[in-house]
Every structure is written in C-alpha cells, then in structure tokens.
Image 1 (cartoon, rainbow, N blue to C red):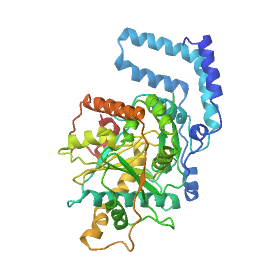
Image 2 (image 1 turned 180 degrees about the vertical axis):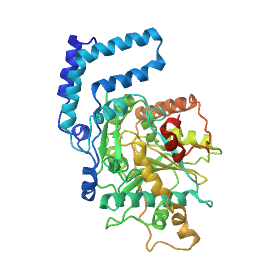
Image 3 (image 1 turned 120 degrees about the vertical axis):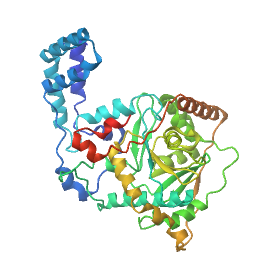
Image 4 (image 1 turned 90 degrees about the vertical axis):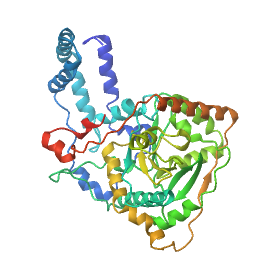
Length: 433
C-alpha cells in the first residue's frame, strides 16, 4: 500500500488488533505443549528475541534487495523505504513492540508469522514444499528392519520420557549460554490438522503409543508400560512381530496427508463423519510419532533422500513426525515443520543415534527376551466409501506427480563441518540447498 494511505492506516489497525497477550498457538488451537517445571529457571534465563530498530530493519531489507534489482529498480525501492520510514513505519514499529511486550517470556513477535504465514496458512501439499527429511546413520552391522524400528522407537520414547520428567539435559550454546526449549515438547505428540484456509496444531497431553503404518494399514503400538516408563526394544520388537499381514485392499488413507491442504481438509471432514474413522484419526493425531515400515530398499544416497522426502504417499502420514524404516534396515526422519524448527528435531535424532544400534539388537544377538509377551498392536480401522476412495487415489496421484517433477541429487562435501563454518563466520544453513 502507499505509505500514509487509507490502506496503510488499515494495516496499523489490523496490527493493533493482533496485539493480544496470548501465544498464537494456544489462542488458535487450545493445546500448546508445555515444558516440565524443572526447566522453568532455564527458560527464564533465555534472552528474548530482540526487535531491531526500524532503521536497522530497513537497511537490512535494502541490502537483501540490492542483488536482485537493477540500479533503477533499487533507486525506486530506496525512495519507497525512505517514505515508509517517514510515514507508516514508526507507528507499525510501535505496535509491534507493544504486541511483543504483552507476550509471554518464551514467545516472540515472530510466532504468529511463523505459524500462520510460513507454515499453517499455505495451501500447497506439505511433502517437498514444507516437510524436511534427513537420513539416519546406518548401524555398524546389518540390522533387520523390525529390529531397527524397535530400537528407534525405544530411543524416541526414552527421549520423550526424559523431557517430560525434566531429566533431559537443557541445551546451551557454545560458551554455556542457554538455548530456548519452548518448542521441544512439540517435537513428539503433535499433529497438524487440516482446516480450510489455515491449518491448526494439536498436541496430546501424554502420548503413549506409536502409530505404525505397514502396507497402507494402520496400527497403534504402546511405547510405555503402566507406570509410564518406556518399554525396552525387546518388548517393542515382540509387538512389531505381531503385525498381521496387510489386507489385499488397504484403504491407504495416509495419502490424503500429501494432498493440497484445502482438499485434505474437505476429505478429512468427510472421513470424520464415521465414529470409527474419527477414533482412528484421533489415535494417529495423538500418537507420540508415526512409524512407517517401508517395503523399498533405496540403493543409493540419492534414492534414499528422495524416498525419505517424498516416497510412497500411501505409507506416510505427513502431518506428524515420522520414522521411516526401510526393508534393508536403513532409516530416516520426515517431519511436519510447523510445530518446531530443525534444531529441535536434531536433538531427538542425536538421541536416536546414541548407542541405538547395540540396544536394538541385544535381544537377538544376546538372546535376551522380554519378560512377558507384549500386547498385540491394535488395528486402526477406516471405513472408506467409494467417494472417499476416489479422493485417496487423487491424493496419491498428486503426490506421485509432484515427486516425479522433483529434480533431486545428493553430494557429500567432506571439507565442510561445523568447525569449518564457525571459523569462517558462515551458517551451515547456507549449505543446505
């Protein structure tokens, strides 16, 4: 809008209306995950994200725009920036500072922009467009897929339990300065729920099971015992071995999560009209995480990256964090990005890598067996009408077409490391393309 115009004044009014003293997530979903009380002192010591002075923000904008513009275009942009600085800019800056001051200590002015504009608002499918993935280092010995899956599930449950009980080590930066933990509880147990126009996030209060997909069928597998303690890998392996053979015609509703968001929202509303379907959706939404047992065995790093980023949509649930375990024991993580950034998922992934490979195999190599037979997986049934079946197929075809259009390759750059980047004052994020 033109600076000082009626539309510009409307921007100020809308900004003022948004300045509410409540976290955006809680105000728009009603279920924000909370940190254990043991981390309260740590969180209070984390500095707030500062708001730069208006002039500094505008200079950064001009520096970012300059390489993309001709000299004439940049001169026009500079004039518009100068006019904004003299008209609407100071008022918007003041409203931004007031809104930020009214928010809780562990929130910031970026939160509503992050959720609403960057992730939950866009209507494009989340595979490729939003969900990142990364592969997990293979174990030192060949590990059968169910054994690998059991070990990873056990480690994920242990990480969640440590975070709930306040025994997970609080993160710090180099030099010991505290890093914010506010997003860590959302890594596991959180689901993105499709809605027309803008999605919402939902977090379970105490998720205790994994939602497991095998050949398009869905199951719930307990991860904790009756006391709330994580189950050992041996017990989880016993549960996974009880997964029944897949039905000849599995409904494969997971493909809907790979569709355009408004279409998925419409399909989910129809799917939820059945109490059985609604119960199964709730079990997936409120699971600690999703485990996809994939029948493929990617033969190269590029194939593994492609399959992890946008593999068979009928074996995925892109609205949650997913552990992907392939037929040859390779593994990866694909995660819905809205509730957290990559750093929080790296915390989980680092825990998965710690001693994970020998813990997962002890019951096989060492002969240890669970003390009692694990509870069998509970099948999550879906009643899919022909009309909904057509939507599932449309979503699957959409996902397959987007994956086929993606040009993807991988390269290993051994000369670049965290110490290399820090020594040169650059961010490793700049090397992720």
